[in-house]
Image (cartoon, rainbow, N blue to C red):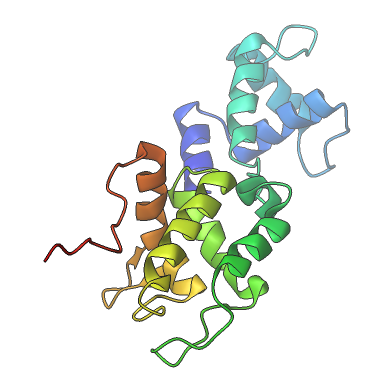
Amino acid sequence: MNEIFNKLVEKNLSPNTYYVLHCIKEKIVPASFVNKALESKRLQSEAWLSEDLQLTSKSIIFMEEINGYFKRTKKKTAKDIMGQNFVDNIKAYVSIFPNRKLSSGKYARVNPKNLEASFQWFFENYDYEWDIIIQATQKYVREYEVNDFEFMRTAQYFTRKQNIDKSFESDLATYCELIKDKPDDEVVYFKERIL
């Protein structure tokens, strides 16, 4: 609000003179306690209004600038951030994890509804498509499957884990980058022993 008053002072306008400009623009009658004739004369003398009480380009530009302070930004919805089918994609993501308890004592799978906030954060911070996310998750689960899922993160912690300093990290983002770069470092699970 201070910015608006500062702009009015900078242009040598009072709230009443700006109100008269607004009324002329919107074609409404000003309130009775505002002296329209006096304010209009002042606006004409400073080239805010033409002789026939029409807005000048100077006043139109200034009013657009002031109106810009009042425009609300549209809050992005979950669909805007994560895509139209985000609910189905989250369910597909969760289904990749084993349906069992991990060595940490937590279940690998979590309720898909609990992951919405984590994925919203993920999509706000990283730029990966759902197909890359699914491939990265499959790679992660395959790697831990060999050791019976020992030390594997839950579906939620794999997406987003909060550190002690309240920052967040994402192993999913790391695996997405691996999939995107198509590494040749596939894990070798068996080695041939020659005696």
